[in-house]
Length: 126
Image (cartoon, rainbow, N blue to C red; front, side, top):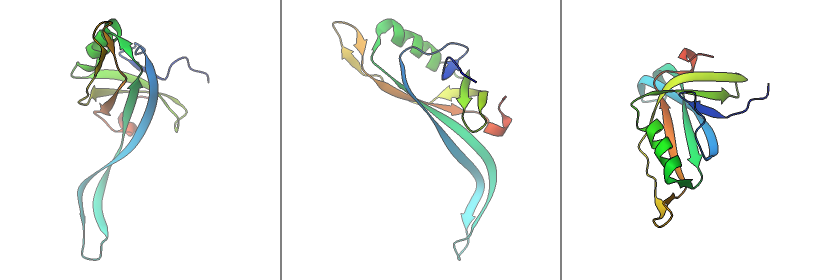
C-alpha cells in the first residue's frame, strides 16, 4: 500500500523531515544475572523510539517544529515496516538542541530529535 508520508505528529506532517528511523527498544524489569551469567528478567515489550532528522529550516519552520515537540505528549502516526501498516501511539520528544545557522537570514542548521513512546508497540493502535 503506497503512503504519502513517513510520519505525522498530531495529524501534521513535520516540515523539512530529512530522515526517519525506528529503534525497536526492548524493555525489561527486575533484570539481573546469576553467578553463572544467566539473565533473569521479565520482558515488558518493545518500545519503538523514533529518530527524526531535519534539514536546515527557516524560523517559521522551526517555530512549527518547536510547537510540536514542546508539548508534553502528542499522537504520532508512522509506518511500521514489520506490521506492514500505519501505527499510532502517544509519544513525547526527548531533549534536543537546534543550532542557529545564519543569524542574518534566521536559518537553523540540521538537527535530530528522538520521539519516545509512552506504551509498548503491542499496546499501540494498528
